[in-house]
Amino acid sequence: MHQEDILIIAYLISSVLFIIGIKELSAVKTARRGNFLAALGMFLAVVVTLWDQKIIGYELIVAGFILGALIGTIMAVKVAMTGMPQMVALLNGFGGIASLLVAQAEFVHGSNHPVPIGVSIVLSILIGGVTFTGSMVAFGKLQGIVTEKSVMFPMQHLLNALLILIAFGLGTFLSIGGEASTEALHSVGLGFLAGDTLSYTIAGISLLLGILLVIPIGGADMPVVISLLNSYSGIAAATTGFVLENTVLIITGSLVGASGIILTQIMCKSMNRSLMNVLLGGFGQTPVAASGETKEITIKEIGVEEAAMVFETARSVVIVPGYGMAVAQAQHVVRELSELLEKHGAEVRFAIHPVAGRMPGHMNVLLAEANVPYEKLYEMDQINDDFSNTDLALVIGANDVTNPAARHNEASPIYGMPILNVDKAQTVVVIKRSMRSGYAGIDNELYGYDNCLMYFGDAKDAVGKLIAEIKANLN
Image 1 (cartoon, helix red, strand yellow):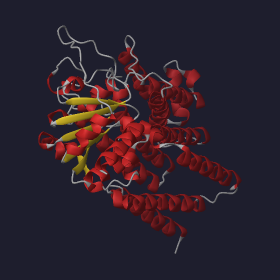
Image 2 (spheres, one colour):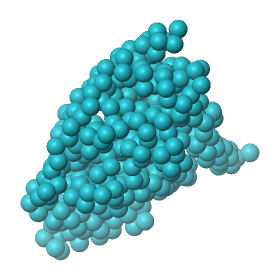
Image 3 (tube, rainbow, N blue to C red):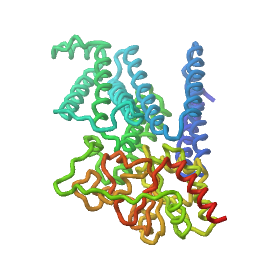
């Protein structure tokens, strides 16, 4: 068997492993196996690629492998579940900068590229650069290093459009390649950009664009941004695959890009907003209520004794997890509470809003980590009609996704966003550390409803005390 045949077969096996791995990730029970299969496919692809390229010296490659593995292991062990969105943002950014650097190196060290390869180089640099700096800004917003609010300035969108046009214009010259590109630049008075300077200029514009495109997007839209940047990293990888004429890179990049776009559309639908509306930014700023819309909220606070009495009498309970549960790492005590209630005859289910938390699937991952049975997790559309028949809804930090203002207040920035109908339950208990608003920057009018009780405290500590009180009362 020829070397080329071995390479093709290995790439085919890798691609199949990627596809099966993604399929397996769609269910909690098979997710670990899917992750392993996808990782195995990537390992096989890397090994056969290095073998095919006949690398002369492996010293730097081995050193990079060891260093990368060490850093990855430390991050995987040390990063808490609350930091997963930031971790995903960083990984998206690393994928983007890798694509940019590979395309940049291919242009600098090559010459007279065919036009299709030149176009691929331009796209890899542009998309990779935007992905890197955009992901770093997203990381900063999630980590609190950069303001969570939308950052807007006059003529911002016009500047972005101008930079994009300049980047594509310069990319046209780069795509031509060789002496023809140099002559074309001189003919329009841009001779100073000839050679490597041209690619560096495009890279600089792409890096600036990544910052400018993400800073106007408020914190409330971060789940959508994370999904979109994930798609960008895949598209950048696919275009780099064309640059390197590497089949498996094209396939894997396309898989990531397509799945990211699909997920982004799902997230936008869950927020009742278009992708363009998200990208233009502005959401996440503290809104100014329209005249007559401001209404003082009077809350009813309860302690652990009163909360325990409410839970003891409930026969049907729906738990709505939010970022407050993630911050407090309360998923394990929440599972313990659900088991305690079930032990004494209550039906307990979990209602998951698609954009709860800081990234897609955040709540699902946390509850899976706590060994909450996946069949007890219900999507919004599956459970929303059942709230009216529910004795008790327990909301743990989920603010914007339970705000009834989304249904009727046209002045609210979340108006029209599908929410969980927790307000229709007979009783609602909300666990929060304070009355601080959610990521959208607005108060939740649910907290002033007659059937809503506020139980203040750190989620882990508050639920722990609640469990102890219920056990004491029942024993």
